[in-house]
Structure formats: structure tokens, C-alpha cells
Amino acid sequence: MLPNLKEEKLDPRVKRTRNLILKSFEDLLAERNFESISVQDVTGKAQINRATFYSHFEDKYDLLNQWISQMFTQEIDKRMRDVCHYTHENLRNLILAVCEFLAGLHSDCAQPHQQFESLVETQIKNQIFDLLTHWLEETKASLPTEIPATVATWAIYGLASQYSHAKKRPVLHEFVNEALPLVAVNLEQFAQPA
Image (cartoon, rainbow, N blue to C red; front, side):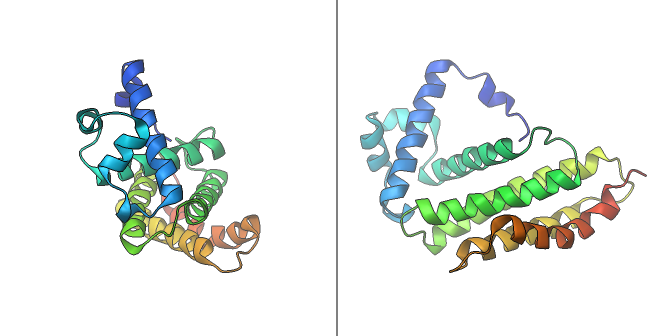
């Protein structure tokens, strides 16, 4: 996704500790639901003290937000080489990434509950919106970007949510090929340079 300069400047030891905490949290999510995981559980699994945890994260909700952000960014980076520009292919890859990410969460996390899903939804929609807004602003379109980016964000997340919750999931690439024109029509008129 877009580079996080703050993250790149961190001391290697700080990065290592932060990654240890995030990995411990991920392991716990595979075993239990988010609501039952405490900061003490995370610190115990990571074999660090609470002060170290709090020097990296405000609380378990901040940890969840940052974990989702990191995991989703990795999913985007895996699919797109040039994420900074709007193309039909980048939009297709974004939809694929969101579908795969949400499907993976439902497969890998133990019993996701409403609170967990709500936190995930907020974080992912924010990242999609930021990326779409960036794409539209890069085209230097004369029209405001907030409404088309919002519509496309909700469409992408809604489609991915439907896909990830389906009892019998359709073939992912076929699903995305059907969804792509519905999302693209909302963006392409705004993505044309003025």
C-alpha cells in the first residue's frame, strides 16, 4: 500500500518487539475470539512485560487495529506492484484482496463475533477509502472525490463481506469478475483526468 514512513524509521529492536507482539496476538486469535483475549494473554504469549506492550500499543483495540492494518497492507502489496495509480487491474486486485482478506479472517480466527467484525470493518473501509481517494486525486479530476470513493468503498466491502460469509463460496475470480463492473462504473467517470 502507501508507504508508512513512521514504521520505516523504527529501530530494528523496536520493530522486532512490535512484530513479536503482533504475531503473538495473531496466534491467540487463531485459538480464541477477540473478546476473550486480554493484554495479559498477549504479553504472556510474547514473553514481555505489560510496560513493553503499552510502549507499543494503547490497548488491545489499538493492537487489533494495527494488526488488521498490517495484515491488509500485506494482502494489498501481495497483489499490486503499482498501488499508487488507478487502473482497472488495480481495482480488480483491490476487490480480490479484500475478498481474500475477509475470507481468511473468517477461516483463521476463532469464532469472530460482532464486535470483532465491526472493528475489522471500520479499519478495512478506512484503508480502502484512503486508497481510492488517493487514486482519484492522482487523476486530478475536477470533481470532488469523497462521494465516489465512499460509494466504491462500501460496495467493495459489502461484496467482500457477502463473499466471506457465504456458506458455499463461489469461485473467487468469477465472483470478482462479476463484481468489478459494478464497482468500476462508480469510479471510472471520476478517474478520467480533467
